[in-house]
Image 1 (cartoon, helix red, strand yellow):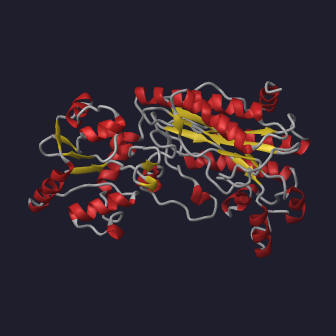
Image 2: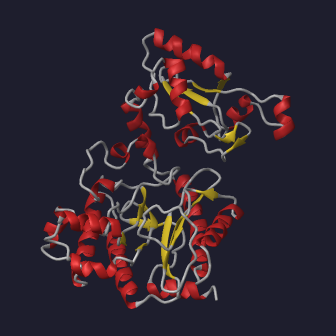
Image 3: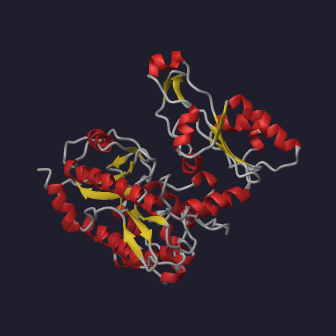
Length: 442
């Protein structure tokens, strides 16, 4: 028997003032019901499916308007059986008494750990370790392969995301605040009937990988990094990153670093096809970065030795890409080792350990490509003090880049039977196209 838990409302500061509701993605995938306080059961022996939840009352309708009953909602998505949430406990108890195994996924919301304790007697601290690995593999082996309908949803999300990025590029002018751009980019998603697939990163401090502070004013000479994506009404994500010079033209140093990052990006794209381990795509992208940084005098030594020792991670401490679908980092709640590595162990090396995807590519996978180059002063200082990878890094020459910041490009791809397909319209990413898009905002 399979138990799938939906999400509940999450109060901001009291029960009637909640955060925007987002259904658990696996529950949404199998049951299609985007409402809180639901649980689903799939009986693998009888073939029956059940949704458990409580119908709203007339008092609820005063605030929300009339709503269809749970049974009506279930029929619309092809679920035959419904029952009040209180009856689920008895069903699970009976199954346990019959010696049937109850499979559930690792919970990531605290209220669901409490439900597992109430219904199955599993202590909250044990809930993740007692989750069903068989069910995890089963879910991953379905959700990793996107249907034509899912691909179309993702394509729509990416199309909206491209519009978000074009606006951000056009607005990135001296004197404009990060907050203004964030608000305008968010509006594009809402106006298209979508939401955000993750909190917007809109920053002149691109060296901080997930920077959600938006309090800076853009000034001449800055580079502005935007990482933003839309999520469709059905829950499918887009995820793009762009970098634009606030002055409208890249300086010669910015141009050199940007072009190197773009060369790594394009080389990675060129390797996308079924059967290629994504870890090898990452390694090739890294080799290009190392060679380029050697050309600028920032790295030295044999390229393969620098790669093996992880010296590149000073400049590229994150992964190259990740799976994408109903979650922007698809099924990350189930564990990257299952989703992105097919159960094989991940590296523990700094930099490489942040690669969320390493397995062989297969048709139907949807993923991102997003190499970056980052100059993080705190990391530079730590490595230099430790003498870390001194055989491969020219720390003296690196001092001139301490305040450079960081940049990246990111696009979304479908693996096809023979290669890949860019999802959505192309966004500006060449230097000429980025500068031309910026100029449209004059």
